[in-house]
Image (cartoon, rainbow, N blue to C red; front, side, top):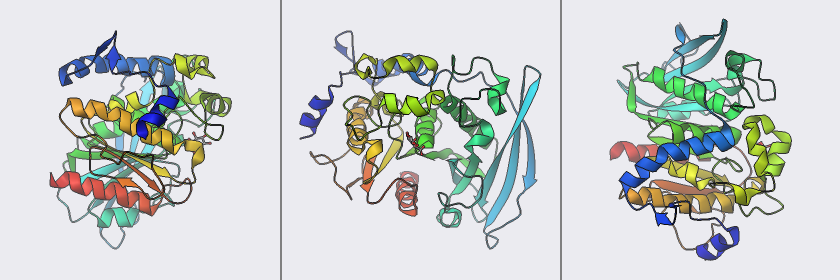
Length: 357
Ligand code: GTR
């Protein structure tokens, strides 16, 4: 059943290079840098060079019944005579000497907000390091504001997703300096366009133990090949959001079969760490079947490491299916496009399981 659906999608075997299948973890590790570069050069664009930001720490106001330590951390980046500051909110459970943390790439600056049930996350023993993505740079074609203004080549060399991702990795750099953080247990989470960003970040940056990719859809976890009229294709996404990508990605409009990869290979770059791909039944635009097949196909990379990828039934997913036992997880909840409490509960329960290993 899965095989039949895959045949319709016509996805080449990208684990086969020059007619030879990648057949060991070592061969895969050698291929990874090339594959990363391919995604950057063809789709997202390259991330700017790493700059050490200067850091300012201020105490936040609220304490959530005295359960939380809240600090606002300001990161100031300077380059080419310009500077830009981005704030991130670090909220840690007071009763933990070393807390596992979710880096949250947010649609909203407020804490908590409709996508971030903060108290519930804290009560489960997790910290949150949250930033508002447009503080990094605006979500439009203006490459002269925020961090974008510090680096040349916006559009030609890199798109906005790369820049949001760049900042998420700088937050990870910072967490590594904090004793109250369990730096081996940092997850990254994002929803929708920020799910795409979370996936790219973890594909490039191996420090995240868990990657939570919520309804990322087109150019996120979902396959680009074989879309239906109801799904978001490369044409549709680049009609509205060309600036998310490198300009050269436009050559794949209505030309998906020319892509030298499909999105499951981006998921594969997360191996051997754990990834959870969340879908919502009514979110047809995001192509849930394509997200499921991507989880299925990417699993080969986990198998190369002797780990289990997606553990699922041999059928296409229906509403309510949850495949959470492997290191590639997929679920399809009811309802529409949203980062809900239910989604957080899935990510938290997987994180709980990882901490017990
Ligand atoms: C949609 C876009 C999707 C998804 C979503 C979002 O309009 O077409 O790819 O990213 O926005 O980020 O909310």
